[in-house]
Image (cartoon, rainbow, N blue to C red; front, side, top):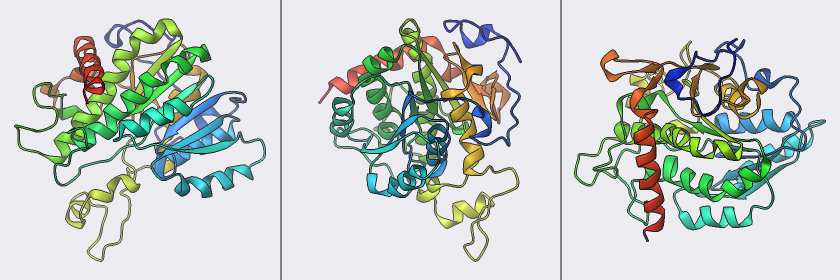
Length: 331
């Protein structure tokens, strides 16, 4: 594998980091032998899907994990399951609605002590109609990016106090064709498109970790990832015709993953790799898929993988950081 480069180095300036893990490795495999006893983690949206598998892997390695979710009661079966696992760290639940800044602020106020790992996993995808939060934000951008930005910046003192903390942003290949639109982020003027809105929010998540290079001196590393194709609750807003067009639903309504789809445990592997593997020590501001660092690609290449140049542009990252900071301050 390649030698890790300094945390402050730009993604375009280094050899791509490789690991020994294949795209089919699962979450526990990528941190096998890693002891997270004494480490504290927060996983947003950790009650189901790849979030739950992320929680399972981190807790099984000994971490104390807080499942931050809109409905904490949905995580109780997971809490009971992991309480019975020998050697697993304690798992807690806490309410968090990322689309509601009051909820985010309450979570931050209630947090005590250092935080070693923040996994920004929660998300919504392809809302069929444009919907707005109480602050007038497009809901996918509010949930997938602005809420996580508020959470990360609010928890910054706790991340800094850990001494060597990691932020993990779960993005998507949908970001490739959807740069952040600084002129109309909430679709007030351009026609609303569910996939453009989703892709923009995922570009913003990658730009968040690019902007977090300002925290490198605080011992905070931040990286983003594409988990790949996984059937989870994320598809809940897709109608049957769309699911059939994707090839994962038959005429009788039965849902079956295609051969290249991953299981939730495999989809969570890259999240867990970035959150806890010693292979990522000192690495920040990068984008991974299939457990490997992904190359930067341009729109002209009509890419199907990799990370878009617009999502790792330092100037755009700084501009978005300022935009989000101002948005949080505006009632």
